Amino acid sequence: MVTETKKERTLIFFALLVLAIYLSPLFILQENAHIRVHDNLDSNLAWYKVLARSGEMFGGVKAVIPQIINGQLSRNAFGTEYSLIVWLYALFPTMIAYGLSQALTRVVAFFGMYLLLKDHFLRGDKWLTFQIGSALAFALTPFWPSGMLSTLGMPFALWAFLNIRNSEDTWKDYLVLTLLPLYSSIVLGFFFFLSAMGLFWIWDVIRGKGWNFRFLFGIAYMTGIFMLVEYRLVYSFLFSAEPNSRDEYFHAHLPFWGAVRLFIKNYLLGHTHVLTLHSLIILPVTFFAIYIVLSKRLWKQEKLFVFFFFLNIFLSLWYAFWFYEGWQPLTKRFHFLDTFNFARYHFLRPLVIYVGFALAVKIISQQGIERVKLAKWLVVAQIVFLCLCNDEIIYREKPTVKEFFAEELFTDVKEYIGLKPEEYRIASIGIHPSIAQYNGFFTIDTYNNFYPLSYKHQFRKIIEKELAKNYTIRKYYDKWGGRCYLFTAQLGKRYMIKKDSKRHLKHLELNTEVFKGMGGRYIFSAIPIDNAQQNQLLLERIFESKTSAWKIYLYKTM
Image 1 (cartoon, rainbow, N blue to C red):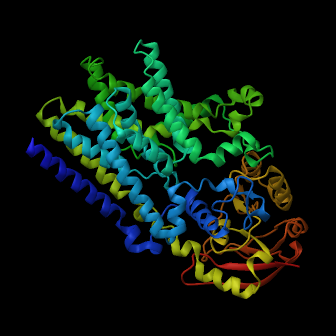
Image 2: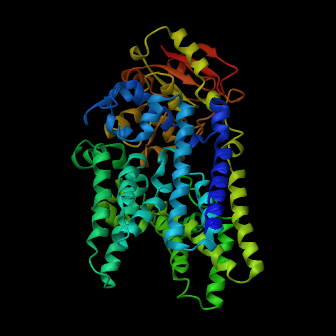
Image 3: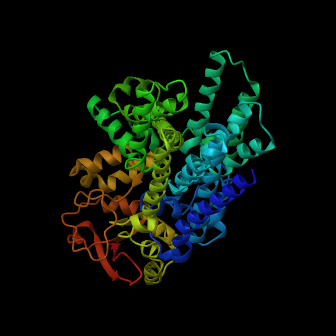
């Protein structure tokens, strides 16, 4: 027993050491680190800074953020002040906050998955290597940063719920259910997890397991905590009467075979917001394990693995066919089916895939002494593979955080303009509006998925002729519109044009009168506009900096 305890501590220490090494580039390089751009640098990191600077951290449910889209962006669009991630960015520099958030999320993910496997799915000290190894692999997955524990916290929550369901609960379980809502999002993971728990409870009732009011109370308790924490979301969903940009989001557009292709892609490769990196190692391992189960008729003994194997398939099917055009009659009748993304049940997949992986290597290891070694090396291989997919490696060709936000460059722009930022409005071409927002400029363009529909329609008039020339950006804007950008037909969906680009914008057609009517005075363009005068624009100056990824052509309305 003492030996096993020592081995457990040694392996946990080693796992935490691996996590520390994995996270070290964020703390060593800080602003010179390379991190994800999509739905991260281009949005959330700027939002946190804008919110902290706005003075509206505790603003009422009808408060607005003055810096963005002429004060028409609701404070509620930036989430709750009861989320710890908001306070990390309010109290610390951006990259310190980012590093702390990554560390907190991954450490909690590790211990949550370890406890879940140890107490419920791989019981017994003989599985210690698989428990800790699989938990470490899960904690190394490249989760969506601003999702926090929305997916990586699910194993901890499931551990608590299974304890409660089995009448083995203590205060620790309710502490977990209380704290997780403070560092996760209900719409980005836990709505789907909690509703799955509700289905689990109903299944128990149907199977004659009794009503288990303790389990039901646990589900209701965590749901209630989320409702309190996410009160802004609840208010916006239930009481906001003004149409918003999500009212024009239409998801049911894929033909049958298009949905089938999306299913195969999602099953094999995953999704950008819940990447599991399971294709190379985990997928063959689980297929090998299911072959063993089938060939040796181990259905009853390995029913948990079989359940997770087919649940993984079902979640990918659900995700893909949520976009099937056959839903259109229902979405037209029940509008909330369009405004709320029910496809996100696939956010359960990281939990399902890595529990399935742990069960799969256990099954393989039971096939003989050589297979024990093989199973251990498979776990090690997945950990090594995940380490090689560190952001610093994957995004090394992207701008660093410092190059992306280019504070030195935009300080020069601000000083050249010479006015207080609140006295004029700007928009960007070829770079994300989040960059200007991060640097304190007041923008009429933005990336938010919850803003007034009337503003979307008004802004569209500026780019109406450009949208008419390019079907891709027209569909992107009209059917979604989360990116309220100065789209151009020539650039399409390119909005990261670096300073070494040789491109020129030709034949640009903006409605500058509408732009000026919305308060627009300057345009930050990443490339020169050849027909600027035809668009009533005057090139004021070109800005460059060694520490910036961009070159800014400053255009002023005539």
